[in-house]
Amino acid sequence: MSTAHLLLGLLAAGARYGYELKRSHDERLPRAKPLAYGQVYATLGRLERDGLVEQAGQDREGGPDRTSYALTGAGRDELDRWLASTEPPAPHVNSELLAKVTVALLVAGAERARATLAAQRRAHIARVRELTKVKNDPVATLDDVIAADYAIAHLDADLRWLETTLERVADWHREVHS
Image 1: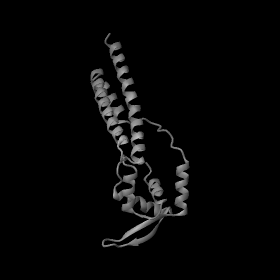
Image 2: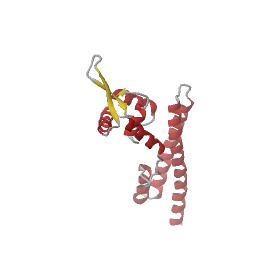
Image 3: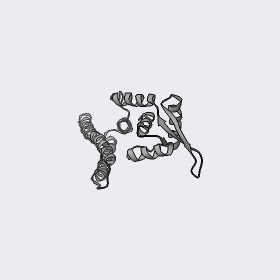
Image 4: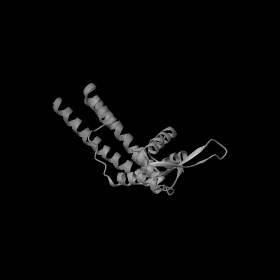
């Protein structure tokens, strides 16, 4: 995820303070990893340095100085460029699950790999059920629903891979031990 581009997008609606940007991120992307305040302010510093945002004002309402930031013309151009670009599919498979199954096969053999795959399958199914409840919640926002849909689609792909891999490991085991 491009934190810089996400902050530019959040600023497109108007000037905001760093804490408002963090809160808006966490509300708009409810299933994403929350942003740390330090990450927000460090990113704002880089965006300001690069001329993509500017300080829009300072305020001191009963506390420390707070600086609001606004998108510049160059920032809006960069946001438009980013939104118009397509994300290339990941060139490499980088998955803890794939690594775990591969190591289970190498170290402990087919039985351990099947146990790992079956346990992971149960965990994935439980997570799909949780996300389905989120989608069906009458107070779910559109953000909640599309985030849940995204996660469910990825979990569904993982579940198909788990099923295929369970079958392949079983076939391999039969071939080796027949």
